[in-house]
Amino acid sequence: MLQSEKSQRTRQELLKSARFLFQERGFERTSVADIASGAGYSTGVFYRHFKTKPDILQELWSEFLEDFIAASIQGAMEAPTLEAAIDFLIRRSAAYFSHPMFVCYYGAGVHSLSGHWEFTPAGAKDFTAMLYQLLRREYPCGEEKRLRTYASTLHSVINAYSASEVMNQDYYFDESTTREILLSLAAQAGEAKSKK
Image 1 (cartoon, rainbow, N blue to C red):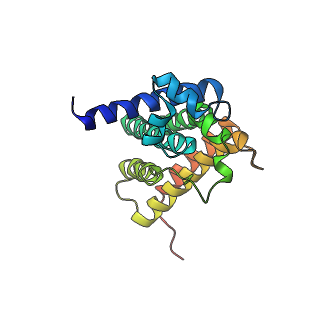
Image 2: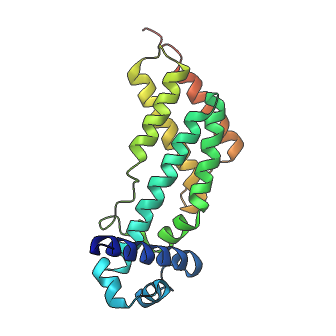
Image 3: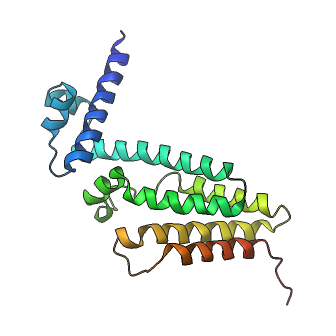
């Protein structure tokens, strides 16, 4: 086995150990020694691959987001109707904020370290682009700027709905009303603008 392959395997074993321990014990109650030991290595090996414990969490978070957002986009695009896609995304968004990886990441205080870590997922643009594609599929003659604006608005409402309880924001969203609002916004996206 090549040294680079061995190094990559070691890195993956450390990530697997950290993922398990962070989700099982939480970020604060897991030490670098725990992660290294769980993978069968010394702490020195850990530090050859990661500078800090937050760095390994950041890599796990990025991996999780990439996979979660990709699966969300795929599921929504496979939905037979715009309404079915919105229902899927409501369920998916709620699952995101209750997922053990989100709970761990948020619990680690990352939301208060915005200068250190980027909280906005890299896939957020892809998610908004997917909403635009759903609207474009439903309203092929819709005005581009209007559909893009509505896609961004739908994304914002979905995020606010999902995060409202978890992040202790001063918002209130119930699922039924949120669904009604999302469907109404989606319908409005396809309406022609009235000329003044």
